[in-house]
Amino acid sequence: MRVLVVGGGGREHTLVWKMSTSSLVDEIFCAPGNGGTAEIASNIDIKAENTGALIHFAKKEKIDLTVIGPEGPLVNGIINAFKAEGLTIFGPSKNAAMIEGSKVYAKLLMDRVKIPQAAFQHFLTAEKATEYLKEQNYPLVIKASGLAAGKGVIIVHSQDEANKIVQDIMVNNRFGKAGKTIIVEEFLRGEEVSLLVLSDGETVLPFVSSQDHKQAYDDDKGPNTGGMGAYAPAPILDETQTGKVIDTIIMPILDGLKKEGVNYQGVLYAGLIITDDGPKVLEFNCRFGDPEIQAILPLLKSDLAEALLVTTHGELKHAKFEWSEKSAVCVVLASGGYPDTYEKGKEITGLEKLKGRADVVVFHAGTRKDGQRTITAGGRVLGVTGVGKDLKEAIEVSYSAIGNIAFNDMHYRKDIGQKGLKRNRL
Ligand code: AMP
Ligand code: GLY
Image 1 (cartoon, helix red, strand yellow):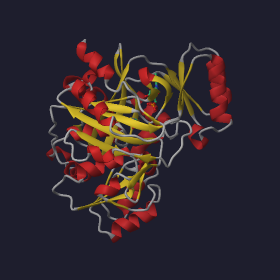
Image 2 (cartoon, rainbow, N blue to C red; image 1 turned 180 degrees about the vertical axis):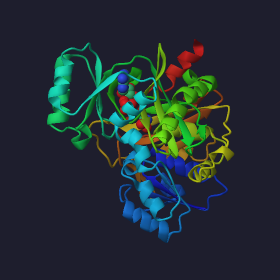
Image 3 (cartoon, protein in one colour; image 1 turned 120 degrees about the horizontal axis):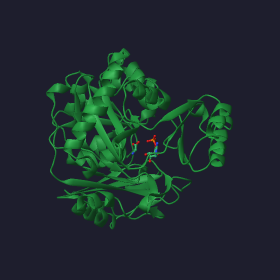
Image 4 (tube, rainbow, N blue to C red; image 1 turned 135 degrees about the vertical axis):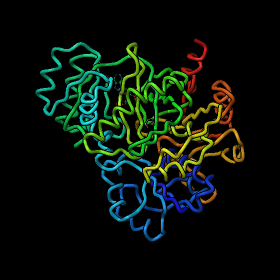
């Protein structure tokens, strides 16, 4: 089978890495890819947004399966465009991807099918939102409804602050079109956890649970990022809890979508918060979580390419996942300054020392090759995943591996996995 993976981050390197071990896969292309995918696949210089060029490539190269990494192309309908050309592609259709593309759509849908979530109101004008903000208790959460590259969620602590954010989003267009509609919602307290499942519209197949670390600095301090590290499985959502979430959240949302004429095929990512009243949904994503997938896939013993292929054929009921009993911890090494401004172009050293290690995989995100050298090319640069017999050992493996790697102004969190360890001790 000839496979095309679309995207160029840590998620895509992880997908390429896993599929490269499949006996079904003969050749892998990655568009545009990064310094890591260049070592195990052929990087193709086409941007993830360039649907026309990707279709042309898939036809010319007789690609048997295309897998889309990022949400942007999914929300813009790349799946529909490929299918219209008779090409096999993994991911949700444009209508189904709205679950991530429009937070208002997702929240109203969750209301209709009675999924536990934060209470909310949505607004189309700054005047109406400002009026509403007068009567509220704080903190509250303000969200741009559309895609805002992970930056569209702001927690506000006073009416003053809330008014400024509303002005910024709705009048100064901080997030462009994505902020035309905003949501103001209840601030929920609890620990967050991610549950990803494959869905072919009929059957779901869960991945092990995982926990992201969104804030830039230790102890969940600092600004939100795309994710600074993750571990799997997350003790807060064990197998029994996962089953409950599937019964009370995942199946109802998929059934609700189906009743409204939307067949969800692809990966569905539920971003959950475990409150005193049980799990509630913070958001749904229509794609693999990054860095979560960098901790999940090193634990998967089964063939991912096969599972994705049967999903596209609506035959997921024939697939099963077999998991390692171990734990995995992925620590993201970022450029100093990320998620704000940072410099690129720094040489990364030490990667060769980790090659061939069975318990460590270094996934590339913002990197590029310059001859033999590997150079930083983004905010999140590498994800260093360590696998161990339990979470404690996985943390040790990952952090001791990091000791080999260096680049100027490298920044990473030192506490990835600690919440899980604490829970294990409870
Ligand atoms: P989202 O993109 O909607 O998942 O939001 C990004 C992050 O903002 C989440 O991972 C949470 O850390 C935080 N967040 C979002 N909504 C809420 C909420 N209602 N209460 C507390 N924190 C929230
Ligand atoms: N790690 C968060 C996300 O992929 O959205």
